[in-house]
Image 1: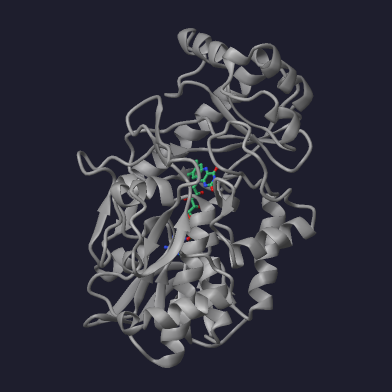
Image 2: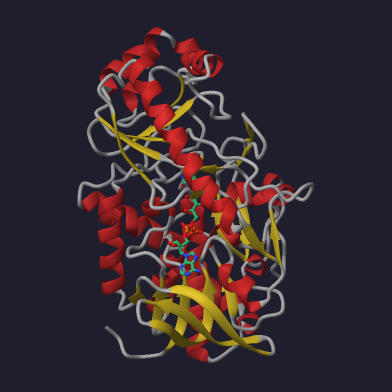
Length: 449
Ligand SMILES: Cc1cc2nc3c(=O)[nH]c(=O)nc-3n(C[C@H](O)[C@H](O)[C@H](O)COP(=O)(O)OP(=O)(O)OC[C@H]3O[C@@H](n4cnc5c(N)ncnc54)[C@H](O)[C@@H]3O)c2cc1C
């Protein structure tokens, strides 16, 4: 256990975005710390049962590279990922299934290999600010409060917890009423007869959303939304009370195991403590309704068991930081080419209805991708604070696209490179020369143009 109390770069939040930020900062020679409230890294992928990673591609082009790809390679080396494969729902350009337990281990190994310190079971509780700079933060540990100093801080908490605590301007939800996308208790379900499920899809294609049935033979793992008739009947009979229209599931790398992304908790705020508490038991209640429904009504699920729900309910959206630039849906859909681009993305704008059933998707054109500017990760009013992950500076709509794990990892690695350079050179984040950032991003094989 480190007795230090000062680092060059301090990353608060050990989700995949924060991890990539920390590894990238360390690669620039910065002494780096990750602070994480749970006892493992990976964020929503390991604490909320999210998967697969979706998507590293825009059409056939891989637009997320560098450290995020190294993560997938390390998972594949341990037979814990099948790499990037065809999405059988044709929703995203590719999907990347993985085993979440091995992901925890691989992230530990990467932290050790890159010399990044990790403080687990530490929750941010305070920020000391002098003018436009954060001088230290306080975290709550099993032994009380611990003060931690840093030259550059990165907010990778998903909820913008560090920025909010520091007094930065934040936004939440959609502009019309402040409501966020629904929370979902993802379910890991084992004992699914995948062959029987695929036969059911082939025999009743109108009941599922697989556009091209031959993809079931090509892709090694299944993604599907469906059982529409059964789901609607169960809703009518009062056996399902979830505000959704179908069952959405993704096969993992483990035989007979799927991730169900089907519960939906609406109209509650992920950052209001009593709302969040209510969301946890509502998500769990729905999960049991759904597993009972699947076992009794859905082919392939006759012997299925609910393995787990997450350590916490999945939060799609909460606070977003107001940065030097607010990225909009228009920027994404028009592929505005920012002169300070740091990362690319190819995922559609995917908004689960904050008030009920249905999901609104705005797809990009085939092969289209968008740019994410450096100014959307620098925090207005702060000289040594950056943000990465789903809480960067976007509108509700743009956030609904960039929030997926490959893209937040690409943003994280760029934030880490920038923080690493700034901390080692002793310069504020806005003084960073973009040409120098570009050079260092290129050196770690990141794609940003
Ligand atoms: C239900 C659901 C389904 C999804 N499906 C997919 C999918 O299929 N594919 C895909 O790619 N993406 C999916 N996403 C989106 C994706 O999972 C997230 O947007 C992404 O993981 C966000 O990454 P992050 O690193 O920004 O935040 P997170 O993964 O949330 O990580 C934040 C980390 O910070 C820690 N933290 C937070 N506050 C504090 C604090 N105060 N002190 C210390 N630590 C703190 C947390 O414990 C966590 O480890 C889904 C999301 C949800 C909720």
